[in-house]
Image (cartoon, rainbow, N blue to C red; front, side, top):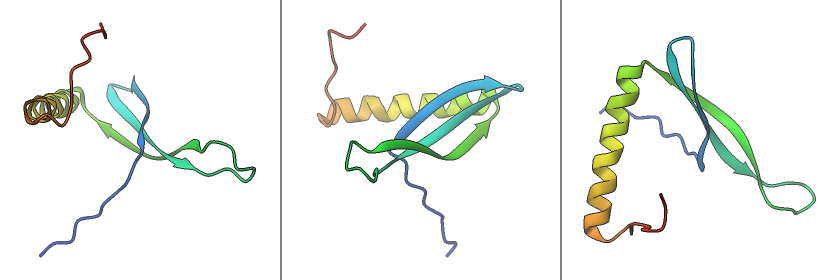
Length: 80
């Protein structure tokens, strides 16, 4: 079997469009020496063409819809 590399991220720090490509900067939360709240540090960038971005967005939306149906997520009706 082929081994897959796993990458962990706490979230996306930035999404931007430059050079005709969509760029995601993923972050992890890193502890500080003084014990304050963890700081977000960029750890990896994913770059994809707009068509790939749209396909990824559609896949994420489908997963969100399934998580809503399963009750894992709840809609925030106040958010607009």
